[in-house]
Amino acid sequence: MKLPFARIEAHLAKELAPVYLLAGDEPLQKMEAADAVRAAAQRAGFSERQVIHVEPGFDWSQLEAEAAALSLFSEKKVIDLRLPSGKPGRDGSKAITTYLSRPPEDNLLLIQTGKLERSTMNGAWVKAIDKVGVVVQIWDLNPADTLKLVAERLRRAGFQADRDAVRLLTERVEGNLLAAVQEIEKLKLIREPGPLSADDVMAAVADSARYTPFELADAALLGDPVRALKILRGLEGEGVHPNVILWGLARDVRVLADYSALQSHGHSPQAALQGVWKRRQTMLHRAVRRHDAAGWARLLRHCARIDRIAKGVGEGNVWDELLQLTLDLAGQPILETIDECLA
Image (cartoon, rainbow, N blue to C red; front, side, top):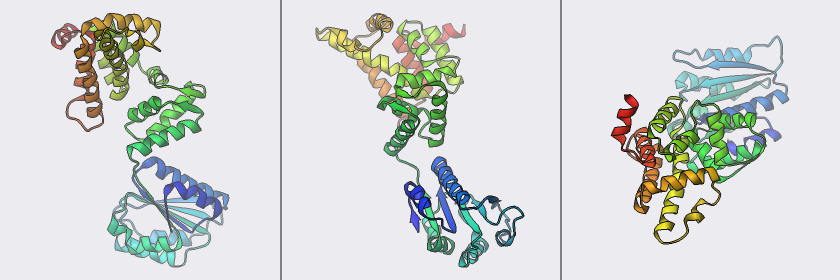
């Protein structure tokens, strides 16, 4: 029987098959599916687990021996077979199909593999599992589904995250679901449950860094390119994700572009500052004079280009582009600033 990952929990609540095949390269869902199978087996009395790693030269008679071995501590056990390549070879295929021709009632076989090719899915050993057990293929999520999963995990953790917070957290971990869950666990340690904004996510990132994206944006707005460059280099050295940095800079550039556009058309620019803290309004008032409306629109397009580079769909070095954006925001030619910093 083939099951999607989303239905494994519901299946295990009703029954327990003699064998499960978990195939795929996405680590979080694969780990959670394996945990769910082992937990269900534990509830059913399979209190022992034997892990077998299949490596080059592996002797497949070990599977038969393990299946026949009597435990000193438990009558039931889980045989956790790790097959990273997803290719057991002729001997392995025969050993698995032989095992499944009469699966022992006191054993549960859990096979974990990497992503399986179409030809492998049509192999005898996979068909044998499909006939008597459960096959779960675990696929990488597309960007939209990744955002949904991160939003759902934040909700389970007690956070009411806005769209920008979900997007920023997802981009910070580059779509890595396991890393996203780890970040959410960190958030639970430093924040109370409740509303969660992108600013809150950035503040959480800042808690573990010597420099913060907030300090970078402030230095640029204040027209201090030397300090801004030092902070940017510090953030890069500390491993802060480029999208976290870009989010802070782009937020201010967007406000300044709106401010300048309103002003150039003879309208009051105050509408662009709604929701901005008073201290930052003062910095924005000073910074807007560095470029005209066309200049701020150019910086906003630059932000969009950096976003594409950070996502791997644009050409360029993301850190070089962030450097140029930072110095443009600070109103300082790039070469003069680098020379001053290195002096």
